[in-house]
Length: 156
Length: 156
Length: 156
Length: 156
Image (cartoon, rainbow over the protein chains, first blue to last red):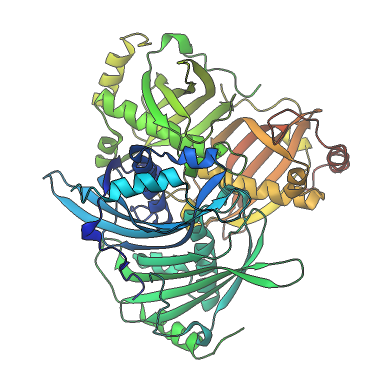
């Protein structure tokens, strides 16, 4: 089974951040659903929003000549997303170590009835690297903010 | 571990198809490596090439109002790909059932010295669906071609 | 000169709609600026917003089996846009006829000082077509809304 | 009229380079045609091929810390391109000056009957800039190759 859930921290127990997005037309392919590689655009917008709300926007990594590089990802497409769907993306950090971390993200479609339907489930493992490619520890102030955030418990 | 290799059929024992591609500039992001969601463009080009060589181009699925929809994928980015890299993509079908199949694909960078360096390792699970969304069995003639292909043993 | 401004209606005299967007990382290429083909993503998001505010979201065209297809465009990239830039996009309809219309759009970067710097200037000519490709007149209620909007004068 | 043809050098008199490409699935949107911003991917692949054949691949610009930055473009979409269309792209340089040049490109669809149907007509004006953004003259050896090429007359 390729999508075994991370065992570091079960989804139910991590707090998560919510981002609402409307699915753009340019992300949709001829099958009338979002192209599988373009879900990563939606997930990235949600992670950007999460980091901004955490108080550590991605721009701050870059100002230190750092990137969070994706080394491994898995994604389950349970229900296709379509043009103009209103979605809510849940983003959280499942675990982190000195140089790496894993984002856990789910995309829910918000239906007119107010229901939220789980459509997509993704895990992205990242390592912190310098612009020149060398690995780096995660910035200490970022880790401090993650610790605070993790202590909050689920926000949902 | 999120990327546990499919156990249905170890990579070493499936035959695979080779496709050579030069990495386009438009796939590369500000980190000077291919954007993680754009590796799926390269993998798609290679699957298209595989299906064409198998004698069953994707266009033939579509002429029957069928799609192969991706329901689950995982990808390990071991080495980043860069602009103008010459890569060789290995594509094979790890397993298939009546309505579903899994593509196993690896991207190797071809260095000037003639070496091939494994950079990317991906598994994509797909189901066969009608344009209206209902699941469908895989076309019988396609399965026949897959059986022939699987009997050949590794081509490498 | 390929970018001569439309003479149908000088820019200064059409009302326009404002949309604020932050430039996503995935739109940026290895030159550290938005890829030239990806400006059309930002412009599309702004037109979607314009149509929604006009009271005629693009989804309503599609529910009638209609598309607005782009037949001609021109774009002047005066200043490059970068990751995380906050931009304001001005969108207006320069002219319309029974089956066609032209969007005039400008992208301004909002600087920290509060200044807005003109970065991009685009014109997109579109025709209304049915899903089967045959041309169609623009929906009468859409034209009615355009007439109301045009009567308002510049909103800036 | 926004798409007036460049008067510097009529299309009929510039030599052009031919590149054959099959339209990838990932370039196609929900209207079943190539997304308007993605035609620039096809045009870029063709320019890359042109520069490689000229003997001055784009990589050589980058090795000198130079980019050809697009400052203005126009594109007429006369016939839509579809998934799996086999197209031939004609690429030529309409004019050049010390720091700038214009590419003229046309996309033709190759039909089963052997006919070539003009589908897309584009002009892209570029300036040569250093990685730090300062303008630069075009490399002298590149200009020398352009002069040789221009002397050849139309190759079609």
